[in-house]
Length: 113
Image (cartoon, rainbow, N blue to C red; front, side, top):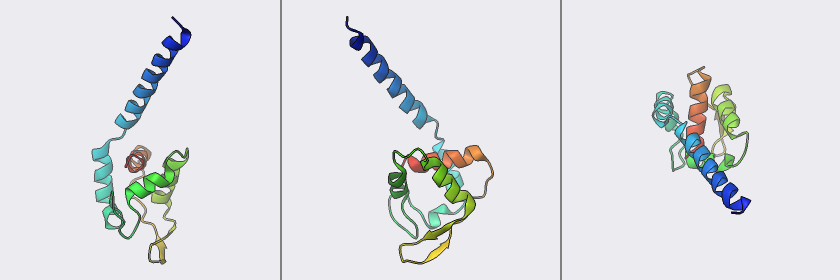
């Protein structure tokens, strides 16, 4: 038996397990509750543009970028100026939690859309 016949299936199995663990790590119910509690749906929807971009559009923007999670967390915790589709600007709402695990979970949920 060749080494590649042993290593390749193990590598595929390891990667499959990793992606399953990563997706399982997101607590969608908790993220959605935090999203709702903070009225994020006033400006964002999962798959359509409202006052702000859809979550799918945000996820696509950060897809494959190592700093995606950090960028979303910065946006929801620091209240930067954001440009709206109509050209106006306003301060992004600051999420009402200091719990870093909850912030990360929300960011990961957004990225999973």
